[in-house]
Image 1: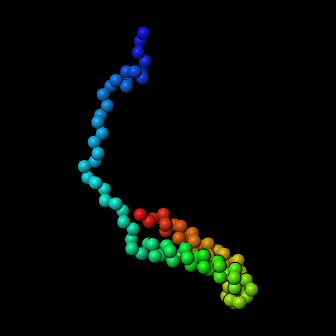
Image 2: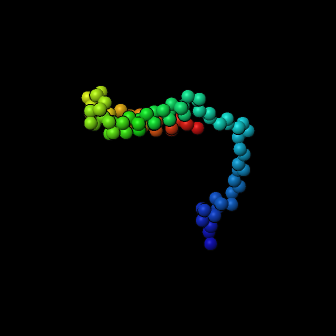
Length: 89
């Protein structure tokens, strides 16, 4: 019986894998990245919490004037935190 193509290919010699000679240095994050990331994340959460606790009632005048833009500011800080966290090695 004739042999199938798969049988012929499997018996062919395969090249032996040799790893690259030069090792790649691990990437290191800049020193400013983690403090900046944490600052934006915490500031965003605190901004939203402060708005809901004191800004809605008018206790903090500029927050009452901003209205729902306070949510955009808070979530903006959180989004920047997430974007910076993708660059952390």
